[in-house]
Image 1 (cartoon, rainbow, N blue to C red):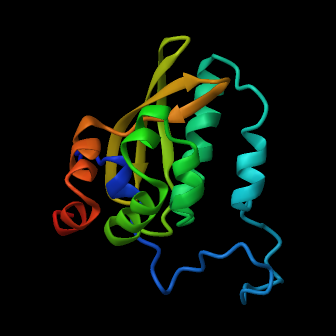
Image 2 (cartoon, rainbow, N blue to C red; image 1 turned 180 degrees about the horizontal axis):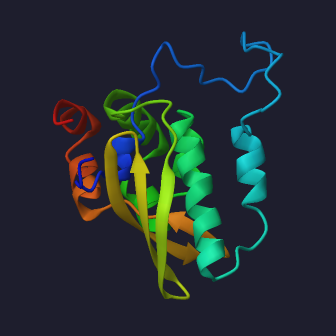
Length: 167
C-alpha cells in the first residue's frame, strides 16, 4: 500500500463511463440489490443537522464527503468542502477536474483513524484501494468539511485544464 497523501482532488476525480453515477432509480441499476447506496441528496440532507465537535462527529462528516466522492458525485462533494476550498475553485471546475483525475472511481474510502486536534480541526487517515493518505477536515457552520490541500488549491488556481494535464 502506498503512503502518499492523495489530494481530495486526485481522489475524487473521474466518473468512469462504466460507473453508474446517477441516483435516478431508472438508471438501470439492479432492483434486486437490497443494499442501496445513499443518494447525494440524502447524504447532503443528513449534513443539515449540526455535527458534534467530537471524534465521532468528525468521522461522520468525513465519511459523508468520502461517500459522495467515491460515488462520483463531485458536485455534491464540492458542497461539503470548506469555504476556502469552495472560494478557490468553482463547482464546475472541481467536477471537471475530479472526473478527469480520480485515480480509483467507484472505490470506497475506509477511515482508519481520526485525530481531533481541537473542536474545529481534525486529521482523517484513510485508505482507498491501494492508496492511503491523511486529510484535514474543519468544523464550519455546524458541519465537518473536507479541506483541499494548498497543493490542490494551487493546481486549480492554474486553471482546470492545467490541473487535468498534471494528473
